[in-house]
Length: 199
Image 1: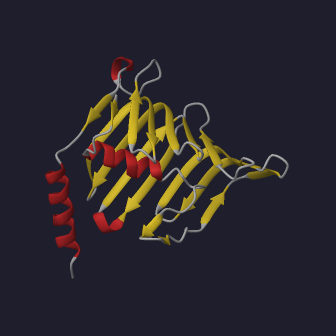
Image 2: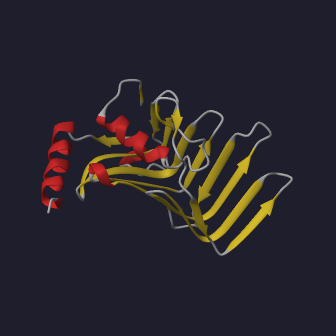
């Protein structure tokens, strides 16, 4: 499935997958003013840094927090090439999944992504969830949009996403499955949540 047209599902994937770009350069917030990058905290059982390869490997119950995003994996490898482009790969042990949670409090949204592996390529600005991939957007605690497949890939610069089926798909029959709720319903849920949160 390939789409260039902005949709609710595209927005979901953009929000979810952008959160994996933990080593990417800061995006511009307004005009020419660069956004301030949040601090990145990584907890793990071990850390191995190879200066020659510009590569860090975190292993054992890895928890990475960056702003409103949290990533949980068993291994996280981060590296930088000679041109300064950054790459990241997060993997899970057998029987477990990489888990990513991105909160957007002002919209009352939470996006969660699961997969056997997550990969970020800073040079091509692509992020990919691989194996048993499921991406879900919640608004005010209720699930609204979900896409599942073997792989879900998103290009940050072109806003093009792709989802692929296969034998390791999270969807039945090795297919891609996407469920999109009309944007008006999500907006209504956010408005109701906002109303409840007022003092």
